[in-house]
Image (cartoon, rainbow, N blue to C red):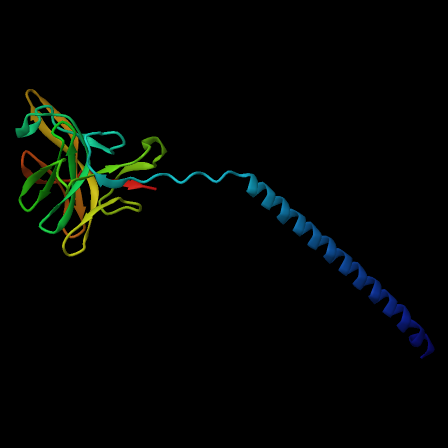
Length: 216
């Protein structure tokens, strides 16, 4: 019994020593973790946050094409208007709908397809807007091929039923003299109807090849 009584103080001292060692280890681990967190935070703070890309916005049309988003071009014949040229993105109102279409740099007019035909409105109208960015090089714009609306698709307007109309472009082909000419022509995509553009005063359904304008 006396031996057991003598053992207890020694055992208690040993337990206290182990606890002190564990506490010391815990403090060391805590300090190491805190130092690592501090180091990671310092490295993170030194990393420059990339500047947010500029997405385009619709503004009222002017005579300048600076900053306009390229969408394609007319066929070399220029259609019935007889003027070929670059095409950009525009939108205008028609029967309560806000409809994206193609802005013809040569004619200075916005052409939209709605109903069963292509309609046009001059850029001097108060209803014509063009898609513009301040700096195209600082904008992450991309044309994406997709059968359905992709992420970050640019919304160009709405129908009277509040259904979005997205900015697209259609790959169009036409026999020009002795060659097949291929061009991109801007238009719109509607989930309930599909993809359409306009050419030669007609509303044209995009068959297979169309792309959505996206901005990330």
